[in-house]
Each structure stands twice: as C-alpha cells, then as structure tokens.
Length: 270
Image (cartoon, rainbow, N blue to C red):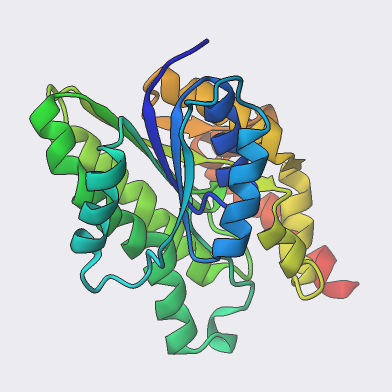
C-alpha cells in the first residue's frame, strides 16, 4: 500500500534499519537513512532505489554520528530543512556488548548507553516539537527482548534497552491526545551484521539463552515491526516465541528464573 510519508531511519545502513528502509521504499515513501559510514549508506540507498518504481521518489543517505550529542539539534535542523520533517522516525542505531559486568569497563558501559539510549532519546527531542505542532507523527524506538528481561552477559546492553523501554512507556503517557504516538519495538535476536560480528566472542551462556528465543531474519522482523507501527501498538514484540518468553517472564517469573538458571548452569559446564 502506497503511503507517501517521509520516513527517517537512524542506523539505516544495515540490519533491521535497512530492512525497514527497503519496506518503506517499496511503499513509495521518502526515506532518509542516517548512519555513520557513508560507504555503507551509499550501498543501502542503492538497495532501496532498486525497489522503487518512480524516478521522483527520494531515497537519501546522510552521514551523521547520532552518538555525538554536541549540537545534535543544529545538525538535525540542517537535515530537516533540506528533506522535510519526518512523519515517521525510526530510531534503530545501536550496538551490542557481550561481556559480564566486571569484564566491561566504565568507558565501554557509558559508550554503549550513549549510542543505544541517549542518542535515540536526543534525536527524538530534535523532531518531536515539530510533530506536536503539526498534531501528527510517529516515533518508533528499537529496543529488544533484552529491554524486557535480563540476559546473561548483557548487563550493559540490557540496561540500555530497559532504559529505552521505560522512557517510551512514560513518553506515551505524555503524548496522549496530541496526535503523536511512540512505540517501543522488542525483537528477539535478528540476523544482522552486529550479531555476526559478535558471533566469535559471544559467551556460551548468552548464546544458549538467545537460541531458546530464536533468531529472525531482518526481513521477517521488519514485516512484523511495520505492522505494529501501522497499528500504533505501544509495545511491539516480534515473533511467537518471543511473545511466549515475555508472557512467561511476566506471569510466571519463578518458572522463568528456573529455566534461565538451568540453561546458564548447562552452558557453563560445556
């Protein structure tokens, strides 16, 4: 279905961000991809342009380090002045860090928190006032199942994703009646370059826990995310197994803790 909206996607050069960009490109939307690496952005733009059927459709890639919060408002203003305000903002920039708490330095912790949480929070701050002035707009924050439950070896990653989840749930209450909506997206593991880069060093306890929840392709995750955003769902959990994990964690927390302890014990013995 053609929607003709303006979609901004941070972290749009690969993984979930790119899969979402391709979906919205096929839908006839103007897509503004934002990431650090211009070469990867150029490839992502080409991948999106291959899917469009109109020479007038705009797909652009803009190099910006969203974790550099200095003068971020001014930088975003430059982008919006050229490409227009987004009707939909998807905040997908992020990274993982698979280390136990004491194995991770303070600097590593802070860098991960900045990219995964603070960058998305502050980018939203840059465009939200214009959405409120228009009385319409959507913001989707890509969190994770690790923003709903703890995962061994992901103390920093879980902290950053829980921060997103809590922030968005509070923001949703502030946005009631404004015409602007915010969604928090909580997928299980998705087969992205970030996960591929982590594969050689992932802790066995983490790997086994993630295997239980399953791995989605970026395309499958994107399809489920798009449907959730379109329905203005406050929390979008992608995949039946992921929803089952969330249900068990919330309704039967003792059982969930017992299962995770057993998995961690088994993985530690291997």
